[in-house]
Image (cartoon, rainbow, N blue to C red; front, side, top):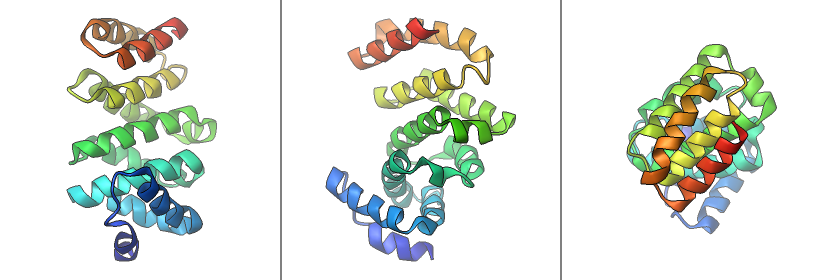
Length: 178
C-alpha cells in the first residue's frame, strides 16, 4: 500500500503547486494518511523528505488526521534522517501543540517528548524556521508543562543577539506573552 502513495508523490518538487497536488491526494483519501506516516518515518531520506513536505500541508488543512498517529509521530521525530524534514516536522509539532483536541489527547510522556525534541531543535544548529516553529510549539505547551516557562525564557533571551530578524521577532512576541 505504501508503494501506491509513493508512486503518486515521489517526484514532487518543493514548489507549492506540486506539494498542494500531493496533499490533495491524501486529503481526498484520508485513509492514505497511514501510508504517508509510514513514508515519513521510513528512514529513507528521499521518502522522509517528500512525505514531510506533503504531511505539513495535509496537517495545516486537516490536523485531525494526526489523531491516531500522534504516538508514531512523536516517537519518530527525534530520529529524522533528512535535515529538510525538520522544518515541516517542527511546523506539525506547533500545529499539534496549538490544536486543543490534539494537545489534550497527548499523554504526559508524549508532551514531555514533544517538548524535549523542540528544545533540542531550538538550542541546536537548526535553521531559523525550525527554531521559530519549535519556540511556538514550546510556548503552546507551557500550561501543560509549567517548567517550560522557566526554561524557555533564558533560551530565547540568549538566542536573540545571535539570530536573524525572524528569530528576534518571534522570540520577542513569545517573551511578551510569557
